[in-house]
Image 1 (cartoon, rainbow, N blue to C red):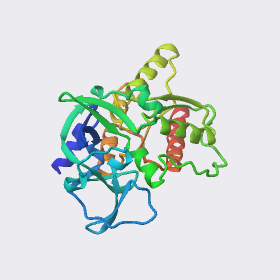
Image 2: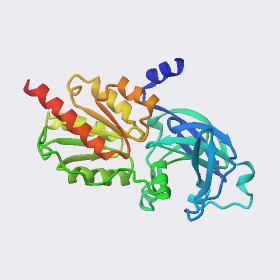
Image 3: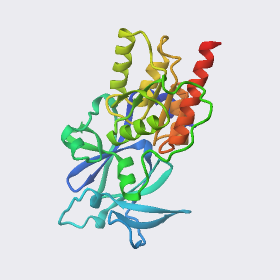
Image 4: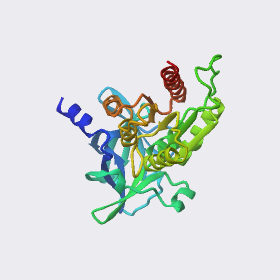
Length: 309
């Protein structure tokens, strides 16, 4: 119970807990919200005909999980065999559970998203799956884009692009609906725009993080006086996360009626309460783009009803 209360209290504070681990001498990080537990080296069963980044499968209580060798994925080599003291991080996101094999785990840090910066354009151009960078205790920590890592290794899309028939009667005009789309992953942003365009949403404004989105909302409000019809946002983002963005929108008397749909890999049972506590109108787990589209239409239709009532 105390843990649940803590989750509710912390929602919307623009803070996160970062688990820092090492591969050789390089420090990496992962949001604690995706971590289920940490184990010592796991005994695995080899699987034939799989990518070399897959160490094998292992049993954890009543589940059989895939173990991903993150060192192999990043092509990090060292003279010392890492398996001698490897550590397995059990993660859960996008309705996927798997193990991530790393060298050692450092510690957990609590910090504000405003301290976390976007990766350099150089890393972006190279398509290195790093979502952000932060300096902690005089060391540079690279925050891994595990959505992209899992997508590449296991062949699971970040956003499902399968086409489905549109509803014959649209609850709102998709063409005219003004959507603000917020995600820090360039791959996800492009995929979301493509998916939304496929379904008739043409008036899209795209932002790279919550701070960028809030500044865009403020600019539009001052220049046109017309807020967006809906905000579709990720949760885990540098500078300002999606929960804090939602909280700012819902606490503003002029903006509180704008529907906010959270579309994130972090929407687990516990994290769902965070979104609910800051006033999110809907929450959909990636990569369920069909669920995302239904949530958008439901929220827009509800808003339209309120306006015309």
